[in-house]
Structure formats: structure tokens, C-alpha cells
Length: 197
Figure 1 (cartoon, one colour):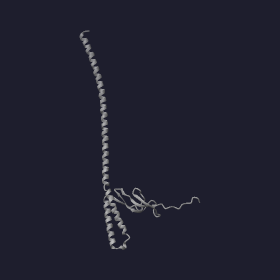
Figure 2 (cartoon, rainbow, N blue to C red):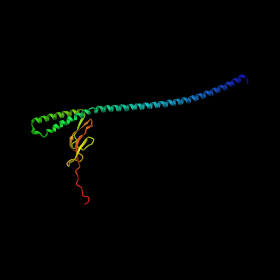
Figure 3 (cartoon, one colour):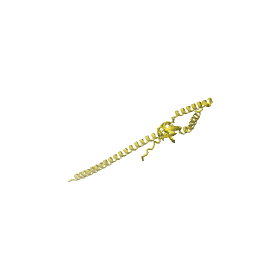
Figure 4 (cartoon, helix red, strand yellow):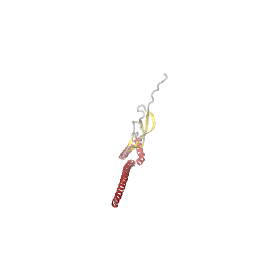
């Protein structure tokens, strides 16, 4: 063999070795590139999930804030209305106190008429602001809206129904701001049967 042939063989071996090394590098680079792509994909999916969670949380916060603002608007007058209710009660008592005094004269009748008109105007003003009167006479007793002052036997009324209203109750936008004070009918005692007979 000549020196040129030896050199060619050495070059061929070196080329084969270099090609094998390059092939190995390419395969390890491709494997690492694939794992890098998968890692980036996983990070992108996690970031998207976090974005969706943050968006949903923001919607919940917005809804809660809107509900709070709506309730604040709806019930902002509650303290004010509670302060006005004794005025309504006084006007109602003034009207009630003049009911039996037809013989008292024209002056009492005119005062009564003025108080009735004032009371009517006052109640209609309260209605404009979603304040409703509770006058549960004859209705079943409801502990959510009524406060029982006493229980009395009432043969002509249904058991657990309201037979008298001591003080009217009031609702503000459907919420009780003062329960009605009522007298409730109790069941009439049925005659006891003598079981020993």
C-alpha cells in the first residue's frame, strides 16, 4: 500500500467517525429540542389555566361588587325610614283616638280629617321609596314578619291567625325593617274525653 492509500483510509475512517459523532450529536440535540418543546408547551398550558382562573375570579369579584352596590342602593334608606315610623304611629293613634268622638264637635272632626290627610300623604311618600305597610289582620301568623305579643282564645278565628294588630310592621324593598306586633288566636280547647270510662 502506498502512502496515499493509507492517507485515504485514515481520512475515510476520520470521516466515518466524524459522521457518526455528528449523527449522535444531532440525535441528542433533537431529543433535547423535543423535551424543550414539551416543557414550553406545558408552561403555556399552565399559563393559560392561570389566565382563565384569574378571569373567572375577576368576574366573581365584579358580580359581588355589583350585588353589594345594588343592596346599598336598595336599603340605604333603612335607618331613615326606621326614624320616621314613630311619626306614622303617632298619626295613626291620633286618628284612632278621635274615632269615638262624633259628638265632640266640628273642631275634632276637622282635626281628625287633617290628621288623616297628613297620614295618607306620609304613607304614599313612603311607598314611593318601596316602603310597604304590614297589616296582617286575619292572616296566618308568620314569625318572619310578625311579633306575637300575646295568644288569646278566639273561637271565630283560625288557630295561629292574627286576630289583632297592636302595631303595624313595615317592609323596605321586601325586607322586614319592623315586624308587625300582633295578637294570635290559639286553638279552642276541645272537650277532653274521659278515657277511663
